[in-house]
Image 1 (cartoon, rainbow, N blue to C red):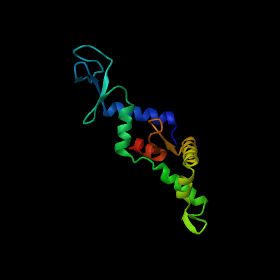
Image 2: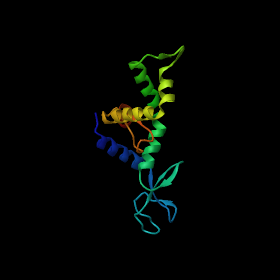
Image 3: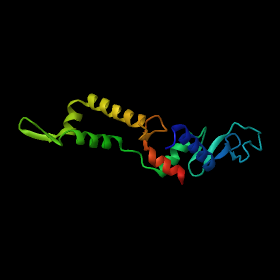
Image 4: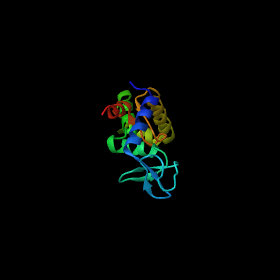
Length: 148
């Protein structure tokens, strides 16, 4: 299993391979890492068919979005809850879905529990995010992508 730092370095390397240095001032690709017109080495990255931007984090996010499917964290959390509690509960004379009762009756508690689950999975190295938690990917899928 690769460390987070090793994964980040490998993704950075792929981002540099798939994108090109780009001078926004002269609006040209600069394969040497320096603009042949203005001489600048303060260059953006250009990803064909996507656009230009500073840094490589956006290139990494694009590569991951194209190659992998983000983890449906709430669905996996629901499945985890279903393994711990009965699928349905009886309230008075009606039988209702346990998950829906938890979510509707205490949405704050549900959100806290989901957040705790997300943190635990990330801490254990099962999932990882490259955009500050907006989307998560299975670590083993990221590693498999890097082995290609």
